Image (cartoon, rainbow, N blue to C red):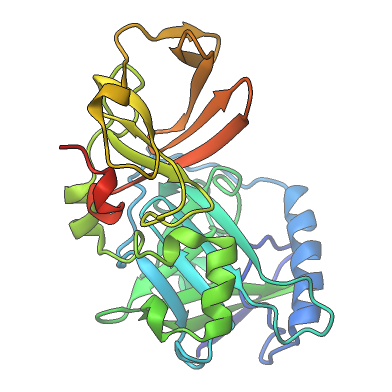
Amino acid sequence: MSTICSVVRVAALGIAGLALTACGSESTAASSAAQGNTATDAGASAQPKAATRTSPAATTLPIDQGIYAQARHGCARATEILFYDGTNIGDVQTNEEWAGNDGPSSSVERIARVGPPRRTPDADFAAASRGFTMAWSAGQDGGDFPSLAVKPAGAGRFERLSMSGNMIISYDEDSYQKCTFAQLSPQMQAAIRAERPQLADGTAAASSAGSSASIPAPVAPFNIRPGHYVPVRAACGTTSDMIFYYDGRRAGWIDLSPFAANRMEPVAGARRRGADWVVDAVTGETLRVQAADKIAVGDPNTGVETLRWCPTAEVRASARAR
């Protein structure tokens, strides 16, 4: 681990999970959390420096998608993991080391931009971050520090730049290694299933190149990815949940029986009602697009269900269209 320190007025931190260390030493996780809150609040009132605007960049990081643990702990002993799924970055923690904890926790940020800071950085941060690729969430973009800064360090590994401190800022490099879900401890696996179940079924484990080739583009009229949508709490391979299906021509629910085309509704007659699509005029069922791969389907009788897209190969065989 290398460390660079600088004296500044205030500091801001990125996503939860950045290591918070005093200059030259490590603190406990409890004091880390307190420092992180102070630093974030202070960063909100920081005076902007001279702006150096850049054009929006891509949102792809130079690392594989998947689950990562700090190399010094390894996969089997990790109580916290970092994940990257091509769109989001975040972490999941077991919190098992804290007496009286409320169970696992997690954080997630959608990547708005990958690239350098929008304004001239502090000289020490500029030196420490040389060679790192920076990811910015919408909330962090334009600030002093990115949500995540990574530098590839060989197959399945990267260095992460973490920032800590208040009046004195420390820049540290931590090594991370890629893990499969099966390599994690039972406690860590349970935390992921509770907080981010899609990581358990491998949808974020493919490499960026491999996954981008297999993800279909959104199609009209709803402008979402065609295919299968499962409840956000469920794994893609769920055998107990209903699955919503859409292919640009028809849409409908697949229950535990095999896929039946005659149960689908043609979408040619779907009409907009504010932010929603009315997909079934008889039942009043609506569909609201939240993202290209995320929807909310509402039913007057059963309420609203938030669903996420899954690759066809990962849903149960009986649910696949024939």
